[in-house]
Amino acid sequence: MKVSAMLNLAWKNSILRPGRMVLIILSVAAVLAEILVLEGFLAGSYTQLRQTVLRRGGDVMVAQSGVTNFLATRSILPQQARAAVEAIPGVAGTHPLAAIGLIYEAGERRSPIIVMVYDDAGGPFAMAAGKPPAEDGSIAVDHALAEKFGLSTGDTLTLSDFEFSISGITRGESALFTPFAFMNFDTLIDFYFESDVASDIAAFPLLSFLSVDAAPGTDPADLAARITGEVADAQAMLPRDLALNDEEMGRELLGPVLNLLLGLSYGIGAMAIGMFTFAAVRSRRRSLGVMRALGFTARHIATGVVAEAVVTAVAAIPLGILMAVGLAALIERVAPVYLLEVLEPRALLQTAFVAVALAVLGALAPLRMLMRLDPATAFRE
Image (cartoon, rainbow, N blue to C red; front, side, top):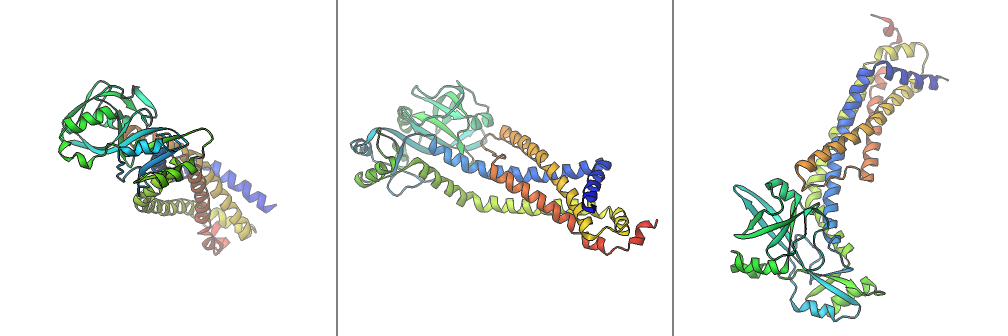
């Protein structure tokens, strides 16, 4: 009976002091939002790396022998590799791809970009405006680059003194904090020979990867193994495996720093949430002293303060999620090169659990001190 009375009292205490309760809920929600934004930033970075490979299509991806990543590792395939791959039984078609890292300069501002070169497949996944680059000399750039430099379709983009015409603006084509651009192979050849990179053309690939379509009934994994075994200087992988390798590369590059920041956020969040709930319980020493004088046991009082802490945390969770979604949308609007997946299920569950657990611990922290209170002091002025 006393337990139910304590739960009812906890609820009434919450609604009778709405100002304090709202302030605590907002504070806890803000802490949760900050943690979710960092979690979303980490998850979004890994998603971008996987999508870079998976959006290029094909059942098998062929790279230079020894290359197991699509990004951050240079792959140069010999030109005869395409004919050798197409001669293998089970290959329905091949699509050449190249990836080049360049620097775009506009006045005093600079930005690294990754240029994806394709023929008939592997180009932009989604267009925000305009169309993919079909004509010679045309290029499509991601909206992250367009937003940063104020570019739009029909504008001129100059790379290494070569002038491209922007045919379209892509959406969501970025990875490793770097926006992508897309062009065809005819434009690539013109770029190599007419720009100031021609003197160092050996450092730039004409063919980096081959996206391979498997014939109906052909097992892609078996086909990849045969390509690796039969084509010299080439290594074939399933796109999902290549994507996972890029994700793992991202974890090695970004994980140490971002996980440190995330750990600090959890630590600061733990102290903040614990402090909020600790202060809320400590401020009620008089009322809890009255309960002790009336015969409520430690178990009854603990149930009440824990119930109030859980109510506070549960109320803060949806508000924190909404705040995180709004903050993520603002960040992506200001800096479209980033992807923040704040609604990633694992992060939501983990953060919600941590919020409730820390609120409970914060509420229980002053309990020992309250248990030592002389009940008579609750009636003194």
